Image 1 (cartoon, rainbow, N blue to C red):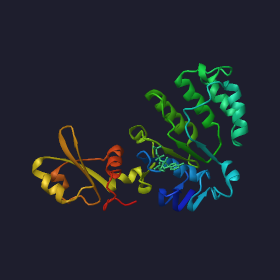
Image 2: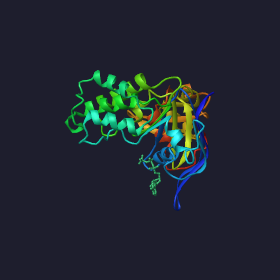
Image 3: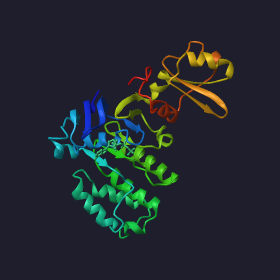
Length: 291
Ligand SMILES: Nc1ncnc2c1ncn2[C@@H]1O[C@H](COP(=O)(O)OP(=O)(O)OP(=O)(O)O)[C@@H](O)[C@H]1O
């Protein structure tokens, strides 16, 4: 498989603080990968290291380039957007497009203009005169006109309302993603991206606690809603996580579900948000959850 990203044994330190601890993973082409983790888990640090913006220990290869020593060449094929919801309010749309030509070598001005022509955004408007939804459309026109192979988005929909967030992801998937491109998205909005992702990575306290394709999650994790009569058996089977939902007790198992789980209660597919909570618990001991 064609791996666009290879990370091995990556650690990131800020003084005495270790933000990312010896993580390894690869990202093949054609994936939409969600990078999930609690506040301070290490998502931004990982992305910044991948972009060669901060020092790190270990190996990172982005499209065959070393981000530390070959950053300029790497950036011709990669697009990193720390926060797409922020554009300078004073800038005129047409000038922004021109600015982008200087900022990214693979920015296709004509393509961005075509995309904008499909919206009601006037080229002579200032960003501050646009509605939030229009600003999202402007961002999307810019992003989808970047002919990169790897897109790295850090909290792309921060501050946007629900329709604008949905529009952002719809257009990202429809207009930018392809079999040869991969996008890595760090977000806290687990629910809204669950159905878009091909893969999910979860970081907890700088460690990679999950790296899995969405299609395989069902094979690895199962949930069960159970009554009081089954509580002792569920507890004895050491679930990864237990929680209450709609007045019922629920448990999540990771590969160690009791063989008679169907008889203990009603089984269900584990949602990413619940898995996230399960794997992001303060306890670092997760005997059944392996990457
Ligand atoms: N420049 C810095 N100097 C010192 N410590 C830092 C610096 N940047 C990040 N950290 C620390 O590294 C850890 C990881 O931070 P990081 O920003 O990568 O997390 P994150 O997962 O992106 O968090 P959030 O979801 O809150 O944005 C945190 O403990 C943070 O305090």
